[in-house]
Image (cartoon, rainbow, N blue to C red):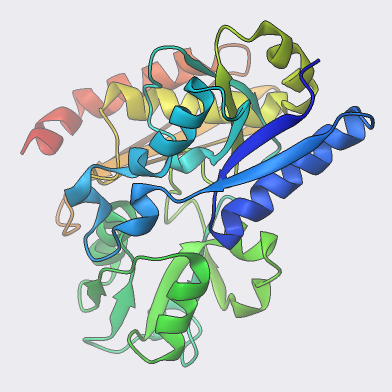
Length: 304
């Protein structure tokens, strides 16, 4: 077994929490193993004055970590699954997807309790086209403004009254003990989360069979199945942060319930669908939902 085992992570407080969490899980399995976390500043963390959609997408959060793996400067990289591009570069693979935290989006405001309470012209902060399109479809009177930076930076901008409200992933707030900032949740039946939201992934070089065996116990089969179904939808529709797209799966009595949508950024058109399929073949369930969305005009909408 490799010793010490070096974990690559972004340097943001949330990313480091995630790396520490995985480190703790590995340490519990292998108490004698020495583990170390190395923090990296990614391009996605450095370029904050532009939206991800215009500078290359969420892949900007992982390139430096993958470079560390390739150069043998780290052995594993920990990611939020919602930040991991649908098509992984050749030579890399996911060794495990851990149990999911709350997958919902959260409403945060110092003045209001929900999106329904916001007055005409109120400014909502989010840089997610997925969130923007769903909010604009239901609340066309609201103004959506970009919001970048780590979680603490986003909360600070809210506290400086730059926004009436902001929308963040609930999982990050919960993990950093900031759930007291949450005024309400956007339920998946009304606001479909990002693909993989709330789940963590552990990336390694696909040639490292020893590490794959070491990390296999960290995989949560139900979460992994749901995320695989969601990612199949996004992959089929070329999903990225440049596309307003969401997919969310959950399991009930050995069946995957999967919902997904694509939209125009302004929310003027949304194509959505839901299906139920076997838990045994998540990718097939995702492919079937993709086919339904495509038959309903999803690719034509996205191409426009």
